[in-house]
Length: 142
Image (cartoon, rainbow, N blue to C red; front, side, top):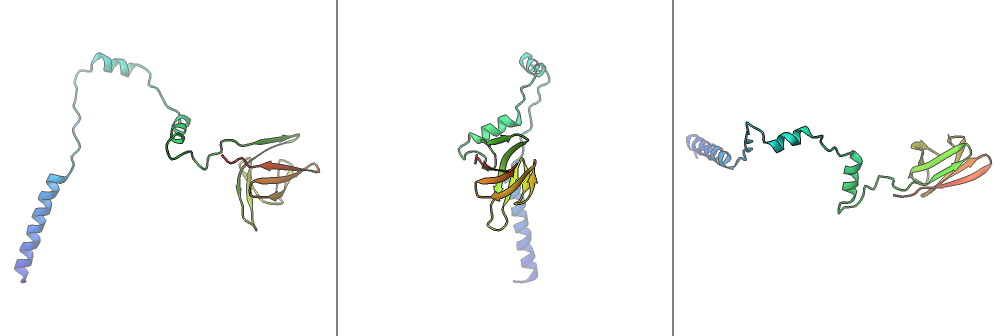
């Protein structure tokens, strides 16, 4: 194939591609402009609009077929002692370096939170030492 024939083939392919693109490209429909709004449209514009809260949208998504958000805490148990109010909001368990979230604060074994010392972190509970007593706080998986 010589150079002239190759250029003709490439030019013809370009023309065919442009024509194909013109007929297959989806164009957005132009909105119909209504110069005089009807009474119903004006009444709807004058009335306050209903706003949906983010919580309503989240609940709607949780009711979907795929289930609820696995990272959302639904039923967290709250342990209240004199001088302390603790909620385990998450546990990242590893045999050598476990990490727990108490009141949304990350803690490790040996840390202190609200005058309580973290003694032990297990897969589903945290043991705190508070005023000489051991307090177990269980993580309620939502």
